[in-house]
Length: 338
Ligand code: 5GP
Image (cartoon, rainbow, N blue to C red):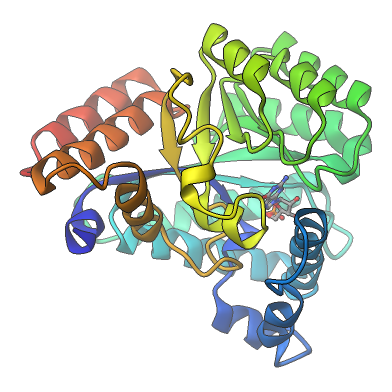
């Protein structure tokens, strides 16, 4: 089954650029040559959910100590595209939060990522379809540059095929809820598609307020309660599920306990994604394999293969790509032998 999943076309709808850094690249660029071992030491299995989450964010700060120049951001981007392309991903939605590196602007940061996309695609030899694109992240710890980020995304998407929307992420224990709602309403007012990390901590009031922003999709949804599920059904909000990430960050203890993926009342679509493939040492093939072995384990192999195909088709439809590209990709997947 794993070989089948690896060779079958796949869609990634939830992955953070810096969190995808290869272990060898992180070790090469970081001053501390044992940085990945150091990260392992504090991502220890003994911590509780809040501490484990804080430790993930400490890890991102260590990654940022390595990805310090625009040249490195370009190289990081190229490696992430290569890794997903090598496992037959056909749509790669990458999100990344704004950074001002070496005295450069947010625009320069995003332009470096885009330049790397262009270079990668122009030198690519594979004949199979591959559509990478970007979402600009509103970071909960940097809400003060949220509006600027949305404005840059809006400007760039007018003449650039790689910028498709925005998303909310960052440490769930940071950020003023009213400011977040204001930013999401602003995004809505200029018709820019968006997805949001919601319910990564226990806070029913915040969870409901964020769902009421009506994102097209939700990331994680770990602490969504019954009322939240009702609202997700009502507003047709699909869910990006990141199983390895949730287990490492102690959000769930096992896949059977994922409150959305294993919730019979939830009517939306599920997308199994990597979140941070470098930090969590996973890949899209692995995430789908875990999903099949947990949520579809009672089906025979041919039905499991059909589930993989359905997940791919659902992902194409839920992507922020144009309708003509979706049509091309659906035809490609439909023609693929199971
Ligand atoms: P970047 O946006 O710098 O390319 O990727 C790393 C950033 O993504 C982190 O600093 C964090 O803001 C965000 N991120 C990565 N994984 C998660 C996650 O599981 N939950 C949340 N809320 N944010 C995340």
